[in-house]
Image 1 (tube, one colour):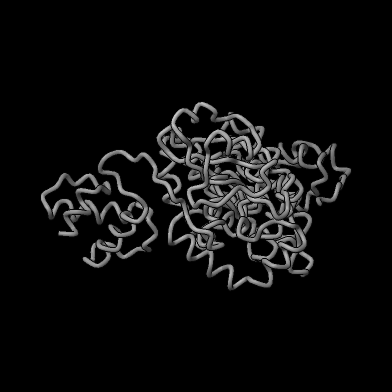
Image 2 (cartoon, rainbow, N blue to C red):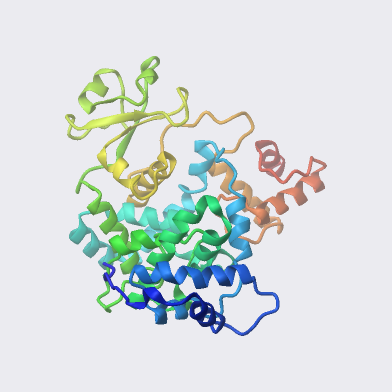
Length: 407
């Protein structure tokens, strides 16, 4: 937990604040003076929350300008329009499941110890790790990382819609730095301040961070045990039920989709004709569950139990929690989704997406990771092949393109 430090420098004069901030970095003709003034002025607020002048100076040494990439990413937040099957394809697939099993073997003793201590399913923790940072891979990409104090100060200074959030998170980030868990150089995160392997915002870090490796620091950036234990701590403290599932995939008979959103016992759902596609019975039939139909009446249904909603304490999206649950089941070897989504004609399923990427790689058009995700590299390869085949070079994966390559 963060220490509740108080500092007597509340009456520091504005002139001395400006002078102190001016010393944080060499004079820069291109520095944003308004931003530097904001940093100087914000010290009074930080001091009231126990941040010392030494910590504040250390945090902002060399910070002269807002982070322009933070503002670009903050502005570019289109409404989420991905269909559930596309969302899941990019997160629950052979690549993420296979990597999860490798990580399960690599960190076997750590995961078992965390599971015993917190009572949280280790496969759920692996799935969250995958979802949040691709098992830490994102932390190796400099273009995805930002210096957290600068990023949050940028949002507080230049983005009125996020200013309140950013100020609160900035104070928390400064407390993390002051507590000595991480150096300024290591205090990196997303454009909005989410940090480490399991992407905790600063306030959540202060609430849940755990020193699992026993080195005296809570380091979710460099210590996989600390990061996974921190996630387990969050889930445990938000009501995770040990030994229980997150939910069940179910086939929903005609007419029963109208009950989506209702809460009944598993026994009652079974009486309405809902069945598990694998033919197995529901465990603990008196457990209550809510029916969700994320793909509509023509798609598979899911009976969500209490642990599903605990996962949503990590991220409030139903799609996110469903992806975590399905990926955890795949990593554990329980088998994947058995029913199909109502994809539009010509759309690829997850296996076909992997096949297309593999064929592009074999032909020498694509040299990236075969992971089912069609980013800029995959789309450039697709466009090149489409042009060669006389197709419209829109760079989009499709069944006609895959069939052409098969031929």
